[in-house]
Image (cartoon, rainbow over all chains, first blue to last red; front, side):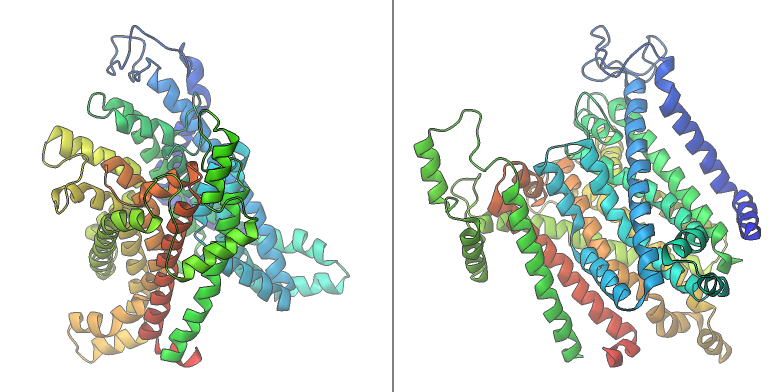
Length: 281
Length: 308
């Protein structure tokens, strides 16, 4: 077990792209978490002396300001904080639901498995993205709902992956040994099955986070996600896209931040998958 | 083959019914109605409006009526765009969305498969790395970031192409939206093709084909491509879904008069019939693509034909 992890770790760190991506992610996350503290501006401070100020060192707003004189640096970082929070929480939701569902389906097997997988197939065939658009439009724009709705989309694939892994684990001798020594289904699932599928789960989860951040920005871009005066990267980009002829930096600052974040998360996720995928080595 | 297709088709109809039913009741349990305005209407007028659109009936009756009209191909009148039927509204916008989407899907396939094959043939070369780095880039950066960036550079900085706007028949208006819409599925298809092509190229029958002296292009085209395209075929339905959702934002950024705006606007306005129409159009497109994928699978892999 630990051998697999050490090997994966070594392969991951041999993958220079993934390491660089991880460093950039760490820097971006740190900036989003503590960056706003180092600025005297707040996300809703209006500086009427510097409306739509060009980025530069001449004034207090190094990354410029928007139409209302709000500091873009602080707004982008605060927006990134929201986007990251949604990404992590919604991934955690989809991860835990998918993990439980997939483990039960794979371990119990038989008719239960057939039914549970049939349900996933049906849900997968539905245009879920449209349902989420509805749900957010219809039942107000609560952030809790946003988390749940986005998380609800990701769990289908997760459940499939976990089920596949569980199916192969179920036939292992240590499971047989556990059954023979009288362990109950719940105990076997928690103690023997879940720890052994966690590798695949982590890999998929790291690839889920950027997807969810992208999806949240997409909803916010459409005006369905985070509401004023709060901002996520999606709302900031939507704002910037409307102003890009006169003040392109309002688009560029959050746009580049989001692009860089998603790019690094994807590269890191790919590196992690390659590191765990023994087939390639 | 025909039996197989009919079986799949029969499976698709209940799915569509579930979607129609779910949407119908979802939009109706939502708070607010299509005739809510800033100032409340006098109750008599409200009652008249409600009865004119059949909203005073029990919801089951409304559902039955809607289904009956739908069976005759009638999506009903729009609640918000007065004097327009949903069929007219969608009929005006759909050609634009369809044009945008088909070009994007065609380009994604037409470029993605050759790029992926090329990368697989030159495995671990500089070209392979370059193609796959670009693929990660295309995959990671959403179209609503790509399109404004493209507009900023090619539209505002270089003045080559219009940033937004639409004249019927103008190709220049479509260039940037199409690029933004094509990149994500293009990147994904290139990656999928490369991965499966690598796997196929290392298999025994390819080694045999090369050993008996077939030229490389014949090996690729006649032997390797077909099995290597299986995962790409599987991605077609998600690709269509991604292009459809992408077109929601791309149309709004580029100011194209497609149907994308009706989905969000319709839901915000509680324009019940318009939302229903959009969901039916989108789901039918998705399910239809799923059927095409099933057929493609059967064509690409004969084993499926006999099992199904």
